[in-house]
Length: 290
Ligand code: ADP
Image 1 (tube, rainbow, N blue to C red):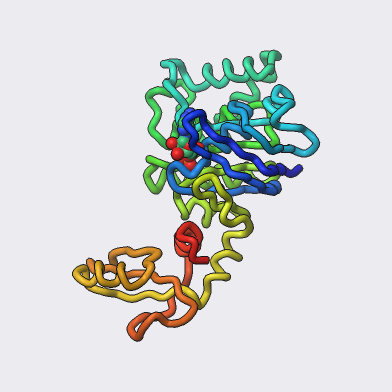
Image 2: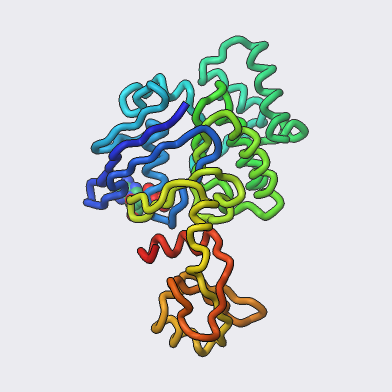
């Protein structure tokens, strides 16, 4: 199954164009939607999750019209929103059971087996009797995946899932996502470049509602080879270099800024060819350099 988005646009009543002619082909597997805050990711995610209408364009999931056949889509959709709202003070297993009823699984035995399997899958079995409200950030996100998996969805949408997770929790969450992303479409919306590089075989970069790149992260990084130059400078030189060059990224290495500059040729002596990464691609695209 494939998700095909064509010419999707959305302008909010205040005149803000959150989606501007977005077209994407999304195959099964993990798909990264990478963009800064305000890029339009949540607007796109909510539209795909049938929670919001677009002004124009079409979205097909296989032969199902996502914008028109909303009930049909909801049966094959799992959604983990950015803000899950307030969790009630009920045990995780009861909460999942309740959500399964809402998804139409009325057979008690079937539900019991499903809830057990889901809790095992997301590694929360031993915490099943604790209230979800008492969970850590990582546990809440794994619970969110468990609820999104109810009803064997064909499409899972996960909005900014790793924000606020510590590295250990993030790793566990990555492993879980890549496991479930093998046979279904999982769209991961994020502003964190590593999320996409580590997990996604395909991605899109979205900026101000527009798609600036779609394709393989690895291919996009390879295309930058030979065009990214780095140089270690002192902090006091930073303003001068910022004026002279378009610095696409800068990080501190041992207290000194290591700057990356996009250029077809060596900018000046002292710059060395850098091994490009997805962050270079991301900033070069949104700065309109590549
Ligand atoms: P992202 O998820 O990438 O941070 P959003 O889709 O939330 O981006 O927002 C895209 C743009 O649309 C932002 O500029 C945001 O302020 C604006 N926006 C989002 N929701 C609304 C709304 N309901 N009304 C007006 N503007 C909105």
